[in-house]
Amino acid sequence: MAVVNLSLQVLPTVEEERIYEVVDEAIKVIQEAGVKYLVGPMETTMEGELEELLEIVKKAQEACVRAGAPRVVSVVKIDYKAEGVTMEEKIDKYRDGRKPE
Image (cartoon, rainbow, N blue to C red):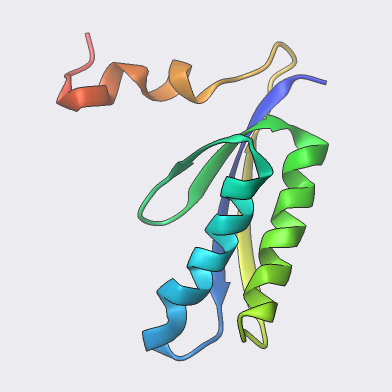
């Protein structure tokens, strides 16, 4: 299967002062999965095989529940094309504050 990009935003229903703590548990799952990822201010984007990434989404949600969230709303975006898609092709021209050519 082609490489895809999948962005995950978890929205745990916890007290405001605990949101980052719980979201950090979801990010830890992604880090430990060994896939390529990029943490952003609103979501984390991963790159890999779709089935593997969807399993990571499931585990990230479960991690939020273990961290004390009674409910977790997750927003998932998937970018797929038959020949594959990478994060680099989308954002490399913006790295280091460079203006796109």
